[in-house]
Image (cartoon, rainbow, N blue to C red; front, side, top):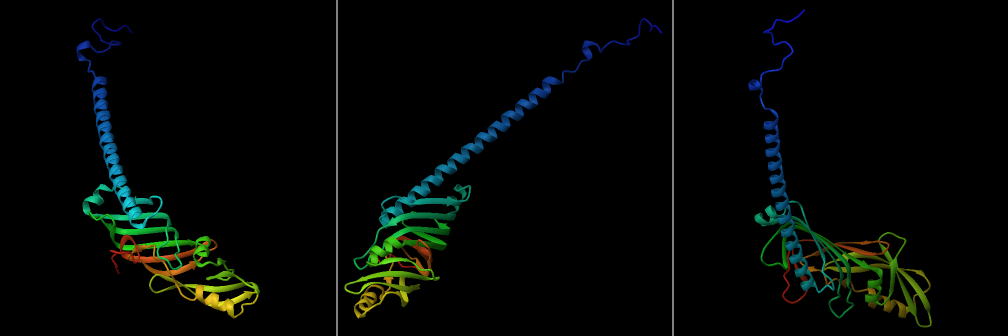
Length: 264
């Protein structure tokens, strides 16, 4: 059938009836991109500012620890939790970890260096006094290698096969060598005590017994831990001793150093 002459069959809309949809969609997309980019830049700037603040706190704490404890190198300090800026504004950091190596020995009688000290501080209060740390709880572990322990005591010390004990090798004039097994435990005053001696190899004459009592009979004190830490336990490991401490306020000065503060 042939359509009538005035029919619009097969013809598109008149130009005046066309609605330009695509430019409007393009405009909305452009605005969305701008907003997303702006938000990303704000977030990135905030993250950078937070990282800078965190680095400053970590550096300040590391410097105070190194100066107070006399370590040859700066300790590693890690402020946990993101973001840190709100924590600084509140005056309390959620958790801070400090790891220091080779804390030098203090004192003249059997000075024992700390091979590695790890300190964890919960709810650390920030203040202008960087060398003093007030926290809700402090947990620390001082690792004492057998090499450092042997140098301090003048005896060859190593782990024993029996749990909680170490072996001491004694070289005695005329009597040869003797091996003694001894238990290790925490004593008051941040001291490590050697108890329950038993000879496992060789013989221990009277002179050897006197030497053993002189070297191991008196507990050895750990003077080179931050003031305010209290020794709770000592664990024997294959490579050395782990001495565990707790506290709630620590000062980055060795125990017993002049000007130090004790704490509970």
